[in-house]
Image 1: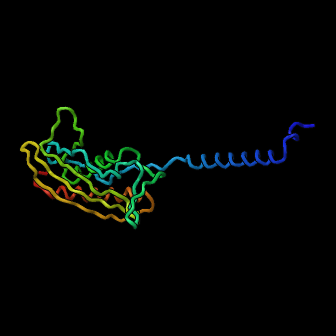
Image 2: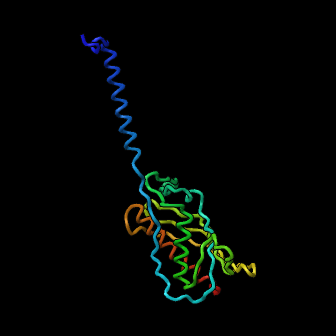
Image 3: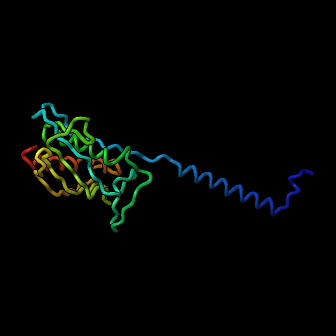
Length: 202
């Protein structure tokens, strides 16, 4: 007689149930291990053909709110809650992406070379810009909400040349998180224009 037939019927049913549970768990693990989508913050800023001055303007490290430092992209829900999306993420550090985009936008806005912090060794620009964001988040409709404060600083004279608060609500022109990235780029372009108009030193 086959040894398998010696296993009691209840034991065979239990073994089949365990095998089925294991198969379901394996399928669930496979479905949850799908790679997330990564998004790059590109810029619409036009390259500068001729600079107005050879002097560098410095962009200090931008400050983002804690939730915006996460690689998972945040969304503000209608009830005020903030969610972080496991499936949609930045390609790198958000603060670096925002700083590099803003530096390009500023160059285009003021036609002067912008160097973003950390500055090269031996470089300490006389005019520096500091931007502190208290809002950088995807709205429930897919657009971008951007807000905070900026300072234009004369480092040589240790004086503040301009200080302004800013707030931009940029609607999405495309669906999904790609539309959110485009909205951020548009908001940073508007911020660069506002900074450029804030001080004659620029």
